[in-house]
Amino acid sequence: RMLKIEQHDGQVYRIARGDVDYVVVPSHFVAELNRLPQSTINSRLCHSYSMTGHLNGMEVVLKTNLHVKTMLQRISPALPELLKPIKARLGQTIDDIFPQETMSWTSVKPIDKIVYCVSRSLTLITFGTPACDNSDLIGLLFEHTKLVFTVMFVMRMVPAFLQPILVWLLPVKWRLRKSLTALEAFVVPEVERRNSQKNLRQSSDLLSWMIEEAKDVKEADPYMLTQLLAALGAGGTYSSANFIVSVLLDLVAHPQYLEEIRAEIREKHEETDGVWDHAAFNSLHKLDSAFKETIRLTPGSLTTYSRVMLDDYTLSNGVTLKKGQFICVNSYCRSKDPRIHDNPKTYNALRSYNEDFANHTARPFKNVYGEDFRWGAGRWACAGRFVASIVAKVILVKLLDEYDFQFVDGRRPTNSVAHEFIFLNPEIDLLVRKREKSLGIDYRF
Image (cartoon, rainbow, N blue to C red; front, side, top):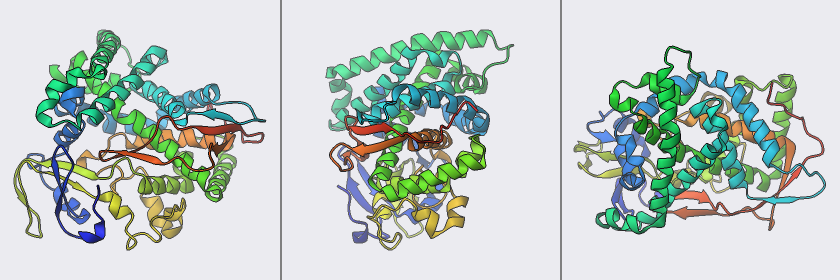
């Protein structure tokens, strides 16, 4: 249970997470902590521990940062070029899997629909064509993601010293092992094929660039690359889908903001003559504001900036963080602080847009600056934030323009909490109907 921020405002305090105690530091110390070397404070070790990486394969993040480096240095700068095939693929996917009936409502499971959309875009970014069209691969990556998180959620309730033994009593652990073997059966031959064709121009995708960027035999190992891609998929698929559906549900629950954002989409469509390029999506400032509001009210985690101390360090206020301690920032309570946000418990999609437009546009949703830490902070902020942001906009622009939505029982589905994670129940239903009049956005152009 999270402690109220007003009870410990500006103080360093300790909370028991169950498997390990966390030292909660005020957000204003993050800039100070970011200046420390990796030999003193470490993000990847904390991430692996929290995800029970030694049980589900996520500990691969401790062995190399190749995936992070490639995402930031190759994929993110290439997004304007990659956007055309991404949006074409997403546009066709939405047409294929969402109802086309305009006269009646159809009940769908939005999480499943959007997870499939996200998976289709991520396989394109990861493997390029034609490998990304393998339907078995798309399903396998999604299944692997579910298995990784299931192992983590269950084993976090078990004392750490028993985890390596009891995990093998879980059927899901055996399915996870099988899914990794199936991924290896796809990725390893693909890596070997691309290595044999290094003299030919490789496609612009994550796997090809990771092969190029690998600095030694360990990083270039096909099995290592498989584990890294599996970890990236697990970290990005469901979290992205959960966020996109949360934005959608918030807008459906507040139709006045939904109509304002639809108007913004119409204006942008006319302004660009129907050509949705990178700049067009990035200039949807009202939609970007809605993104910020949803992540403020329903972030993916109750805490952010999770780190483990590898050496003692004394903060500027005189408090010493000890070697081996896990630390975090209580960003969830901060997002509800009335001294920072007016009516903090009230949803206002245009909060950022109306309160300080200059700051809002200077620090868009994909930005890591500021003290909300939606992507983390410092050198280990989420490397996939640029991809996640643009994929979310591509999906939501088409959905909001072409479909109407209703809640099954008239109310927004509530969020679930497990450990520090906040998420929507994958089994929620949503009523969908194709709109008779829409812009007819064609992402092929």
